[in-house]
Length: 196
Image (tube, rainbow, N blue to C red; front, side, top):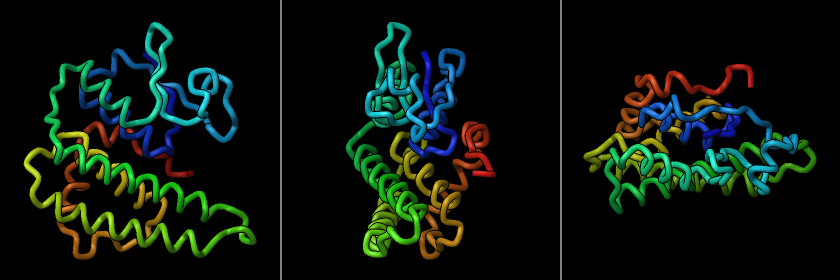
């Protein structure tokens, strides 16, 4: 299998961490792609032109990190618990990823076309989401699951792109969750490049 990724993409990182955690590293070859360059290999595999994209040995391609994550879990024999609490947490984590990436895209636009409205709207959504997730994490029994991983990746991405953010303040469960994931070899093996 080939996993087409960008090392700065949090969606790619989620899948990369899962490959390590689920013991699939010998089965999955990573290929770096730059989506904004319309990389022909990526476009051929995924006409949406987004990463990650998992290309199976038969040529079938899976897009979107949540779908890829489900496939990887099934391939590994479903070792992680999967219930509606986990799915809800994963959905909130994916939404948080969407907001943080969209905020980043807006922030790197030329100054004359940046929209303060959209930046502030996304920031409010980010704060509401992490408050909700802080409550859910406090009742979580299984930190090794797709929901907690998605949340940890989102928080790590916030540290990467918005180091000025004070998201840890008043959110001890989230801080502990990220700290636990950052100690794992899978997280240590997949950080975004420091110079990006």
